[in-house]
Length: 274
Image 1: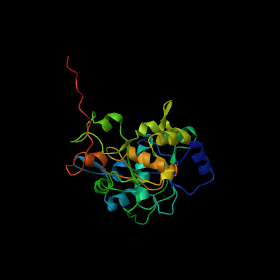
Image 2: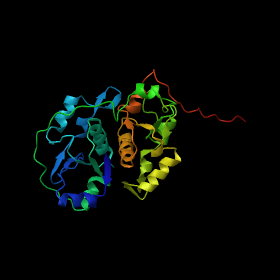
Image 3: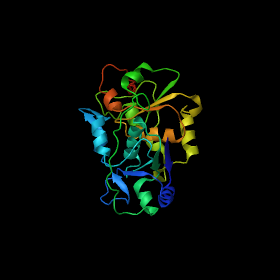
Image 4: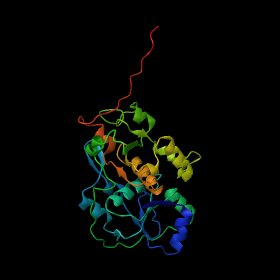
């Protein structure tokens, strides 16, 4: 389970001494009281042009060793990047079997505005070793390729329209995974308050317009360029109650640099002759 809550709700839970481990992935110098700071670069791995891969499990354990987390621990994730860093860690923890994950709508700034105090971080604690379960919440290029046009699968592209169409090229090949439904991650946010998610009903309506509905029971595979933006889409889909949602680490930085997978390329524009 991944759930978004308001900053006011988070502060109320803190006052009620909720047993959260609070993980702050922001770059701010001052600590949120009672939080554990986690460096984003420590929870991803890059290999050449392919970025946003899962780190070796030993590296992930080292990055989180001070948090005292177990799979039974409720975890509150916070960042100052519109939820991109927090949702990437939420997805990673879901792959490790965590199912009690919380995120603050509006992030660190909203939390401070709601009067979560700055102060002493949480003391370091020892934690059991985490392990990946790649049979859930995770997929690869090969798995996606084998399920293209499968009626029980939908592929969701969280990138910009220009990246999807191929006019913004960020890999050796431009375009998108064939059959992928374009779901720009920015469409999830309120235009007048872009750090805050739209109301649930609006997000459901936006998804339904694209044919993405939880009652269809389809497997949803989400991707972007490096599986940060698509991690946010993953977190929102889980918040809304979608069942089998899978993230593709490496994402287009992997798919777009390969020669063994199909690519839907944009049609070249043709200037009419006179």
